[in-house]
Amino acid sequence: GAATMKGCPFTLIGPKLKVGDMAPDFELVKNDLSSVTLSDFGSKIKLISAVPSLDTSVCDQQARTFNEAAANLGENVVILAVSMDLPFAQGRWCSAAGVDRVITLSDHRDANFGTAYGVLMKGARLLSRAVFVVDGENIVRHVEYVKENATLPDFDTALAGVRSLL
Image 1 (cartoon, rainbow, N blue to C red):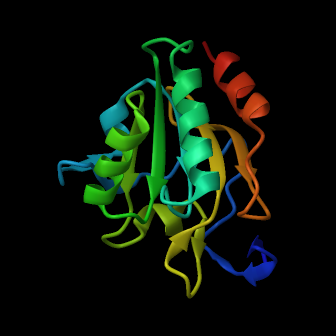
Image 2 (cartoon, rainbow, N blue to C red):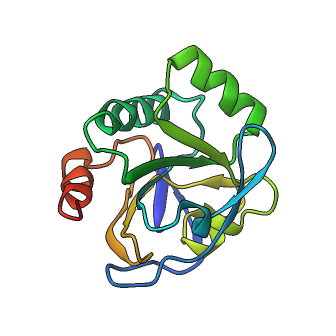
């Protein structure tokens, strides 16, 4: 019951990360089917937005909001949207939505991100909604596990966490 989807409780698999934890490494799939890891983003500040599926209105709004915010954050910040959606679907969604600043990444292969970040919904094979801000040394500086997946995260607090690191 750590998270709900329209009131239905789900157990989340993996640890609950806290501010000050070292961000776990991951291997995710880019839209071109190549692999990417946390270390591939080097010393950039990373805002990681986990969503159940970009094909839903709340996830769509979350990714679009962070895409708009990215325009004012500078080159030292990267925003990642992670879901279990297939890379092809993520690419189509980005094109249709005009999202060009958020990097969409898929955890569909083995759910290693979901398990490492404590957002894999047991039995659903979806990621629970969450936002992580990770500094240039890969230390977690902000965490929000959104209890009800049908609601949006606190954008202002997450973006303030990013700005505090600039």
